[in-house]
Length: 174
Image 1 (cartoon, one colour):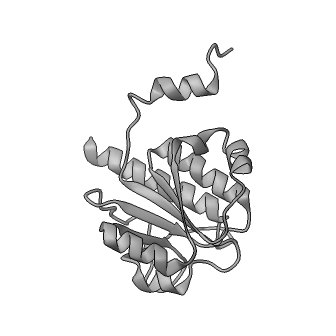
Image 2 (image 1 turned 180 degrees about the vertical axis):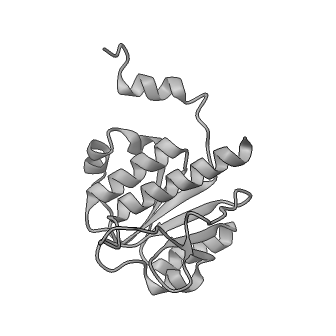
């Protein structure tokens, strides 16, 4: 049985936690749970910020569904895709879009750039990534799937990409 609260466990890990130079961007998400799961994955894999394009989610619901992880990351909201693109460009961030499209690179062989902050953009649950972001992205990646289905839930996609980013960084560091 645990003898610490969740908040106490998070606090005790803060001094040894690795921070990695990546964030997520959620575009027009309709389901607050998906935003909660993004924040949880981001906190677990050492990312920094969840950029939100579109409506302001119910943050108390995000907190509840993320198991408290949403308090460990920052949230920044933009009203539209181009405001996000301008922000990322001004900061010198790399935009990597998760999309099943011609020209997208297989994530298994993709080489993440750890020398620049990377924002992994995932599209909304029905429409995918907005064209303004696709047109301004540095790269597109996809997750190959051997089964009959061809796309994961958007928060699951972000989780897989965060894991890939963190695992390849760990391998690179030896």
